[in-house]
Length: 296
Image (cartoon, rainbow, N blue to C red; front, side, top):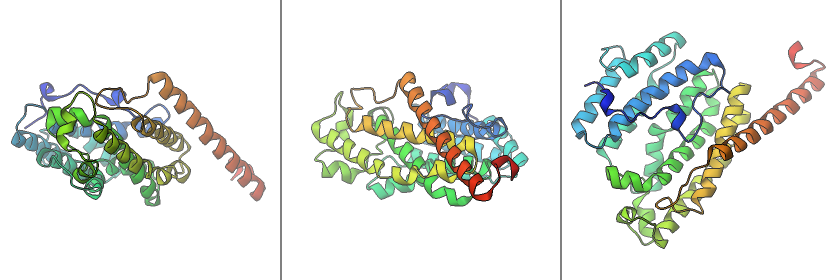
């Protein structure tokens, strides 16, 4: 079963909370990243479709996998990624991991513990960062910091959309034992305004997400590619700002997003800081070696 246009959300990379293959990223790397994003978007649209039955959703995900692996051409959204993987000699594993998460979205609507949620993030979020790193030829040693950042981004998204996920899809990504510990249940997500108990749980989960950020903040300084360092520094800063909003706002009744102007300001600040740090490091290296960077 293919992903018919009527099943698609119409959402694109420009609608995401965080930059996707922005102009910061080198032009030669944008095509594979965008192909990966559009593959993921097609899978997400299928898994999240409000009227498709579970078997139809799983059939679409199966078609995406079969096309990705070259066994058919049924799912057009997978063809561009398949070609980019061939051109770059990259593995399909990260995309296959994503499909595992989207299948889980179809069949599993509740998570008992934070550890269960992190296991979900292993397939729903971490493959995205790992793929971008592979496209840039970065070492797998950078995966740990990337995994922390991607998990944080995923949980931020879940907390922002907690009411919509429950009300539209009967999905709850807030761990049930955390809800219980704060004296509430998933049913509280059906209200127009969060109860004090639910707010307490949201803020506690935002604090747990914040605990991922020290590792995540290591990513920009860990990657070799300067443009990727700048891009990831922007994402780290935006994640930090959104966590701050989640600690003070009610996602059931308030907007928990940054305006474009504020996001741009934080992005410029992060890029400037990264370029300054990289410039100082390059100057220090040139002094220690007796050569300017372009002479090495």
